[in-house]
Image 1 (tube, one colour):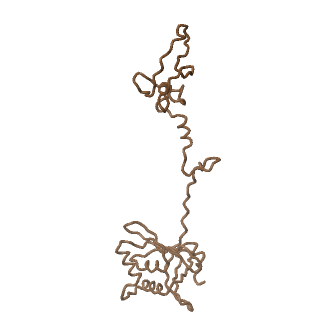
Image 2 (image 1 turned 60 degrees about the horizontal axis):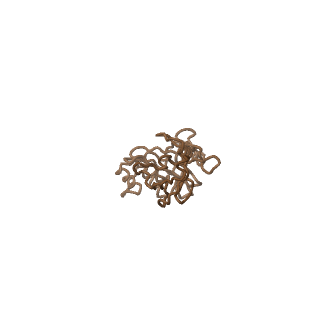
Image 3 (image 1 turned 135 degrees about the horizontal axis):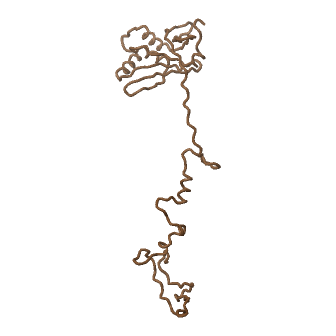
Length: 245
């Protein structure tokens, strides 16, 4: 068969480059020359079958291919198919199934009632007083700034102002866009600083917005319907105390 560089000189079967025929097994053809073989550059030529087509690749000799059968190489590649997030044994890839994430349990919340805004001298900052509805009915006092204390007191007592305050304006915007305050949650405390969030719902779905407790209470008290006030158990255990203590 000719190589990639084109047909070369015809070679005899015993390896002589002069093209002379090798001796035949018959006594009458010992000195008879065989004509040089025609080059076989075109395996698909009419009436000719190349050695590659007749025998097939060297790896497939002696074995017929069955349609639909997966070769050993394909099976080897399938056996080594990478699994996302897996690590092979003895290697740097993890073949083990990743552990499912277990959702953390929701933090325990206790419902509280708004009791009012008080100013205890000699402090110049008012405090919001919340009380746990169920036993042991712990009390929680959150110190706020004076402007927020005035805004909460006006909403609690239903006092109208000549012009809308900031929380009145925000309440009007929420109503115009079809949003309502579903709950106020005091979620944490770090020293004198309390953290809170508001649960909102509207045409676009439910949303949770982080905020200060004073702003959340000022908005909640301006809603047409009562808004639940929830306090985390951890906050009550840290900053709450029994009434009168």
